[in-house]
Length: 297
Image (tube, rainbow, N blue to C red):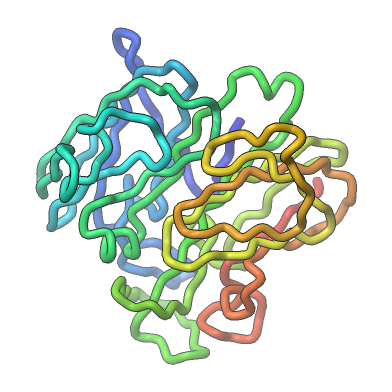
C-alpha cells in the first residue's frame, strides 16, 4: 500500500474497463503549521494534490475541472501519452482548460511501475509555484506480497509567504509571491516540521520512500540512522548492478527518486533537506521546514 502522509489517494470508479478519476484545480488554504495558512493553488482541496495510483495496462480517464480564475492544464510528468493528452497548450495540440470548464484526459498506462508526478503546464512560472502538482504512481501489484512492507511518497515544495518578517512565525492567513526566487517556507507533502506526520516502520521491514520535486530548488535529502539504496529514478528502475548506497540524495526540479532500506536501527530518525535555511520555518532557530521523521513502532 502506497501512503502519502498528510494527503489522500485520489478515489476512482471503474466503468466499462476504464478507471475514472476527477481532479479539481482550485484555490486552496493549505495549513503549513498549526494555524498558519497560505492561499495557494491545489487540487481537490490540498497542495500538493491527492496521489493518483494506477497499474500497468490500466485505461484511465481523468476529468480535470478548472475552478481557478484563469486557464490551466495538466501535464502527466514522465508518462508516455499521446500528444493531445500531454497538457502543454502553448506548444502542443493539448487544450487549455478554461475557468468553469473541464477536460477529459484519457490514456492507457504503458510505462513500467514507477514514481511519476502531475502538474500544471500553463502559466507555469505562477501556477507551479502556487502549488499545482501531485504524485502519479504506477504501482506493481505483486511486490507487496514478497518485497515491500512500507511504501511512502514525499513531495518537496517551497513557498514565498508574504506578510511575515524574517524570523517571525505566527498564526494567520497569508498570500504567496509565486514570482519570487527567494523562499521562506519549505514543505514535505504540504506541511512544515514539526507538523509533518512521521513515517512509521517496524524493525525488519523493507521500506521504500519515493521523493518528488516540481519546484525551483534542488534539495539534498538526508536520512539519519541508516543507509539507503537508490533503486529507481524518474519512474525507471535501476538494474541491480547500477544501484548504489547513499544517505543523501539530491532531488532536482522535475526529478523523482525511489530509495529503499531495511529497518534495522530502532529509534526516531530525521529525514530532511540538508540546506540549513530549508530546515527552518522562516529562518527561525528551531528545527522545521523540509523535515520529517522515521519512527519505529
